[in-house]
Amino acid sequence: MRKILLSFFLVFVAQFSFAQDGFKADTKKYMELSGQLKTFELLTKDLANDVAEDKRADFNKELKGSLNLLLDKMADMYMTEFTHDDIKKLIQFYESPIGKKLSDKNEVLFEKGQEVGTEWAMGLQGIFMKYLGDDPKVGE
View: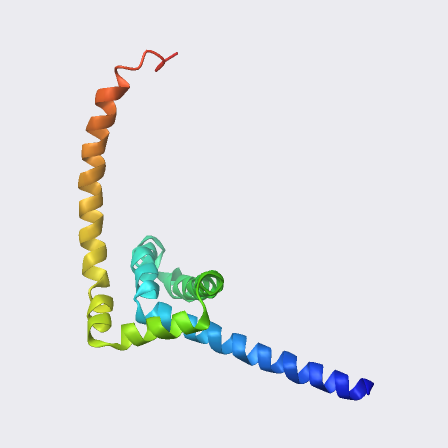
């Protein structure tokens, strides 16, 4: 009886583990299809230019490992917020023509978004400075 229970438990654990592996693989696939990995690569692409050329290959290798670790942790985070079925539906969307278009536009949207954000921040600074001067507590 003990062996039967142990066998049943091991089969159950193995199936659960395989299901989790599939969930994580699908979550990583979603992140790639949605362009999130590409966004992280965009954020880090200029870092290599600051590294001496003779060390750049090693740096890029470690950076890629770091991005893989980030992708793994981000997948874990997504898995706490979405079901496996949710992720599968997101994958379906990003494999559709409009989903592919959205993903393909990530780089240009990222760059334009930086410009818009910079303009907004400059305007916000003016608003902030206007009200900062009216506060008698400032500078105390």
